[in-house]
Amino acid sequence: MVMDYPQSRADKTSSQSVFVLSMLIVILLTGRAVYVAVSTDTSLKSIFILIVYSSILIFVGFIAGVNASKTKSTKKQEISFLSHSEPSQTDADFNLNLAKYNSTEQFIIEFLLQHDGQCWQSNIVKESSMTNSKISRSLSKLESQGILTRVRDGMGKRVNLHKNELV
Image 1 (cartoon, one colour):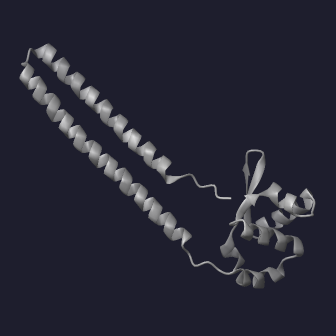
Image 2 (cartoon, rainbow, N blue to C red):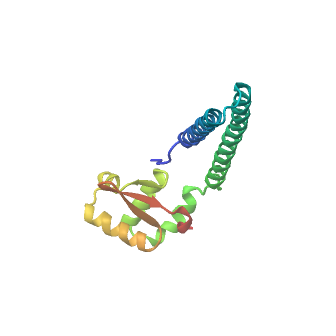
């Protein structure tokens, strides 16, 4: 159960905010040019030059902003890729370390390993033949040892396994 949000949503939001800010600046500068033209009686040619000059500056700023947001999102993707590309350990490596846990704790750890290290607490109860209180007590014990964490998410609890603590 993966709970990551797609990167494209963040890219889209940052591009939209760059675009909106650029349009706001265009409106403000155009309004300023019109105000100066009306109040000082300048020629239409100089107003046009001012608007074109302002638009060119804003276009350059818009391009720079879009490139900066793409660069930032690319770095985030590289960092997330590097963090997920750690050498994975086989189930045999984990089984050696599971001997120090009781059968309930072993079931919970194996269940989490089968589900990419995270699931809902209610799913563990449904898949086991144990009561909710027994699972909850075992999860509390594993949580106190730092093996996993439980996070309240709405009405349920999400359980996240820390694989590096098993080694």
